[in-house]
Image 1 (cartoon, rainbow, N blue to C red):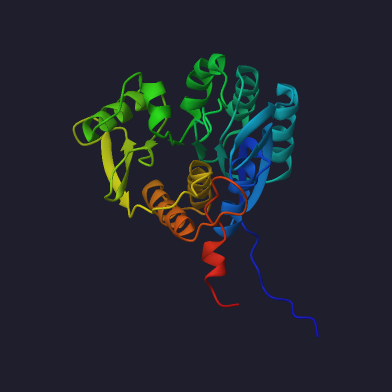
Image 2 (cartoon, rainbow, N blue to C red):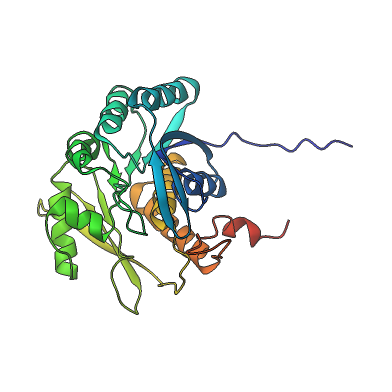
Length: 281
């Protein structure tokens, strides 16, 4: 007997990012997170990387025109309701993506300003930083820098909570609608704190909220930034407001880290399927 179960079409969520041949970060992590949270994930690949849990050994990027063609083709064929960018790599690719988004963006966009891999390999060319600030940050409904990325963008060292709040204020001045400064690169034994900054508080200054999650002691943190931004984009695409979307994505990532594993040599990834594998089927 064939059983036809009723189902709803999941929302279309897009990632514009680089591919990780090791499967733990980039496009691969994004699609896993999107699926686990109820989205239909699609991808525009901005670069191919040769990498594993030990590091990145090479990068090959397609022509900017082909990246734009991927993006246009996806937008022509699917009703995208949420998207994220990750590794954009070069100024020509950034310009090509931004040209399409300027004309076609009608969905929330999460921008993860990926610049350096966990192993220290540069994933954003130096001449691309200006293009990203000028073209992509103003398109962002949420920007999700980690500590080194925030220091690069804000032009300051970040060592204290006061520094973090000042950096968020400076980055908000560059055009994104909101900024989530991730706390994973800050040392400490207590809870991990991310700072969410929104412009236009009661006094006209940025409204900055500290959001905490229990710190997870694991070496398997390859692709955490990709996972978090993809999860936020999915939650926004599901219709959630920004703050609850960020909080749900934080809880999802925290669970994935608690259930993380090491599939090969080096750093492993979060377990993107944790909410699914912990259920009874």
